[in-house]
Amino acid sequence: MKFEVKNNKVLVTGGAGFIGSNLIDILLENGNSVVCLDNFSTGNIQNLELAQSNANFTLIEGDIRDKDTCIQAVEGCDYVFHQAALGSVPRSIADPITSTAVNIMGFVNLLFAAKEAGVKRFIYAASSSTYGDHKALPKVEHVIGNALSPYAITKYVDELFAKNFSDIYGIETVGLRYFNVFGKRQDPNGGYAAVIPKFVSSLIKHQSPYINGDGTNSRDFTYIDNVIQANLLAAAVPSAIFKERMKEYQANTAGVPGINEGATISEVFNVAYGERTSLNELAAAIKEGLSNYDPAIAAISFQYGPNRPGDVAHSMASIDKGKTILGYVPQYSFQTGLKEACAWYWENLK
View: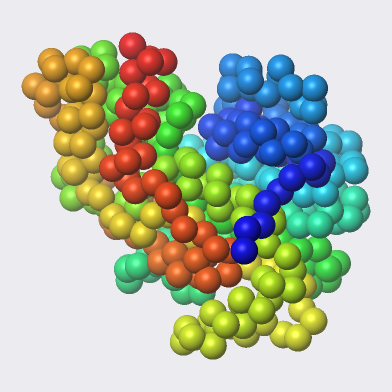
């Protein structure tokens, strides 16, 4: 059974960013009318080049910290895909006030606006950082630990607000806990850039990349197309089928909180591939991928330094819940996604 988001009006916040812009392109391709809200603090107008040539695309330059802007952006929308946030654990440690204002107050502004507008469902970017110091692998949605950074706290508070709004106001919410997303359009620049584009950018410049720790830390690296699939499914699965599948998942999984009869949908899902790769393995794979374009890259060595405050040692997701309820089956492994990413970066960064 195939569920799709087609011919609707949707809002994508943070739409000029890495994930948001990729999502917008697919939504427009599927015949939707798309509103993008972005303040361009971290987004890039070049990411919207394809979208801006489409008559069904509307850009609102504004900030989610402004309630009136959120109300304007969500007007008449069937779905909201909330991708806007200030990411990065180190950024939140350096400036917890701004991260909190954007990630919590901005989230509540938009959630309130969506509730007032009567949207069908509110899909939002949650984070694997929510698992904090819980060491068991793989990570399952109903078991988390203590937060290790202000960023992790903000993303967990968002989940609490989403559940509370669903209980009180009846708005359907779905949170997607992203695990180390990578792929085309991910920015390699700035002090808070993600590890894969930073490694790639350095190697293309024949510079020695820097690894935090001894390289044994591991992550569940997740290609962007898998994330887009999860977002579309989170919106498209009809409410009745969603609840039916949720009950099936609960019946087969020990410890999962039960969904009450008549309760409004408010769930979170891991979005990952379900495997982990160490930073040393990542470094070797990127070198191998880029060496196909420039053989000299194979000889570049990596530097090592201390672990960053707030980082977890290992992360890997269980994606069983997403498979059962959303029908999420990631199409790109780490290896196949990295091959696509290296090709894109080589064309766009060299």
